[in-house]
Amino acid sequence: MPTILQVVMAGYWEKFSISNNRASDKPHWLRYCHCAKLLRCAPFSSLPISQLPISQRMKMSFGLTFRSAKGRWIANPSWQCSKASIGLFVPASPPLDPEKVKELQRFITLSKRLLVMTGAGISTESGIPDYRSEKVGLYARTDRRPIQHGDFVRSAPIRQRYWARNFVGWPQFSSHQPNPAHWALSTWEKLGKLYWLVTQNVDALHTKAGSRRLTELHGCMHRVLCLDCGEQTPRGVLQERFQVLNPTWSAEAYGLAPDGDVFLSEEQVRSFQVPSCVQCGGHLKPDVVFFGDTVNPDKVDFVHKRVKEADSLLVVGSSLQVYSSYRFILTAREKKLPIAILNIGPTRSDDLACLKLNSRCGELLPLIDPR
Image 1 (tube, rainbow, N blue to C red):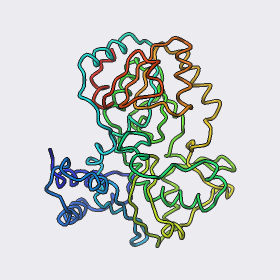
Image 2: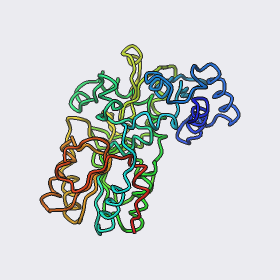
Image 3: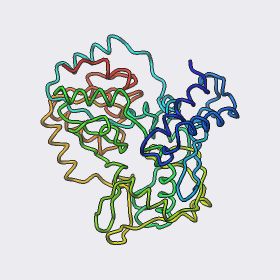
């Protein structure tokens, strides 16, 4: 078991080597020295992660400080570590059952037009929390709830709060990388096993892994949409506009949410400036489906067609509690397609599945031979 010192050193180094992070232009030696300085004063630094109190483990992965320096922004993670946080958001699961692995292998081998549907559970092993997992999901850790579509559209203060939190969380969120489960599904596609991939996630990790036969059911945080004229902008471009509008603004946040924002106080948010659409001056929104909104009907029809063309369906990392994904399970049942579910914990469709596995996605999927 590595110590906190070893893991945080590795994760901090990785964090600042990501090209999307504007702090990554620090010289390598400066990044290394900054990390060592941080850890010399860190409590518990010689302890294995497993011996830390759970509250300290959560703080270790959550602290974020933003400050401006010489006209540019620097993210200063306080106990921030992508490698150490990987296990923080994955619920407990039993050891892999060799017989269950064989059953999934048979399911995949017999599938000729496999449709895979993924949820937040596939990305927790990349360090992104989900909402519903027992003990480690957002609902279990905090009393926070995701932003509602109607509130965002109607209220300027709510948009201001959302974008301030998203601005602070973006460098970390955008730097997350695919884990072995994402890479396995990308390989299945390349080998002709995976017919279509539908994801509920907005983190772009499937795209980063090379998946192309892909529908992002709820959109993608890496795009920004104007609510008035429909103009699309890369999220990284908007980050630069935020920096220009807020040259002296600073904030310290604790707590990471599944969709990339962090938790800030109302006082911190009050002075944050939000840009408008450069084309029409309209309000900007991430190109994602917020809670309370609906998925585009054309996209729903498209996925229904892909399900009807498939000969089997595999659910990966989703409890299927949201109807926008559950309806496709109902379509698969109507078509009498065999359904397999890989998810830690119960799902809404366990009774419809011919195979249910309670394992980590990143541990199990790479064991399956898609040929």
